[in-house]
Image 1 (spheres, rainbow, N blue to C red):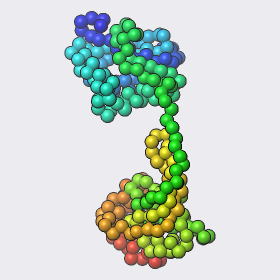
Image 2 (image 1 turned 90 degrees about the vertical axis):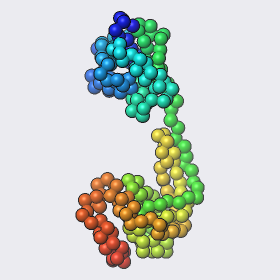
Image 3 (image 1 turned 120 degrees about the vertical axis):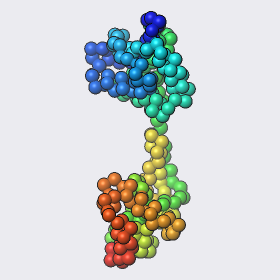
Image 4 (image 1 turned 45 degrees about the vertical axis):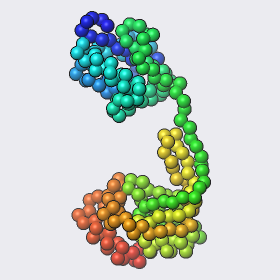
Length: 252
C-alpha cells in the first residue's frame, strides 16, 4: 500500500525490459491483465519498472476489496470465464516469450498473489492415432472417385468430415441420399490434438443408416452454419433442398 487511498499490484514478466519490450506485446499483457482484474474504472496503469519487465497498476481504495476478491476467485478457478481466459492468456504470452511471471502486492516480490508458470507449464500432449469402431453423423454433401475406393464428405454444422472411404456398392446406395442426414457405421482413425480436440484422420464405412428423425429444419440449420455457405443467403432454403432431393438422381 502506498497510501490509505490505493493498492499497488505488479505483474512481473521475466522477459524483456521496459526499454526492449515491444509496444504491441506490452499492450497484449496490459489488456489481459485489465480483463483479469476487472473493475475497470478503479484500476489504472501506473508505470513500468526495471528488473525484467514489471507492469505496475494502482487500485482505487473503494475498488480494493473487489479486486482482492476477484484475484482470489481467479486463483481458485471460480471467476468469470472472461477473467479465467485472461489469466490463461497471460500464461500463454509468457510461454511464448520463454518466460514465467507472477503478480505481487506492494514492494515485496515475495508477496506473490498469482503465479504464472508460463514456459514451465506442462506441455500439451498429442495422443494417437487410435483406431476404433464408431459412427459419424451428418448431411451427405460429396461422393467422389472413379476407382474401387470412393471418397465421401459429411457436413455437421461447421464441421466437415473428410477422409471417409467406402466401396462402390455402398457409395451407390449412399448417393441416393444426397443432402440427407445419415449415420455412417465403420472404423475410424482418430488423433487427440494438443488442444484436446479429436481430429478424424480416416474413416472406413461398413454401412449406414438414414436419420429420418432429424427434421428438415435441422438439416437447413446445419448447412446455414457452414462458413461461406450459399445456403445462408437463400431466400427459401427449404424449397431448394426439396428440389435437390427430388432431382438427386440427376446429381450422379
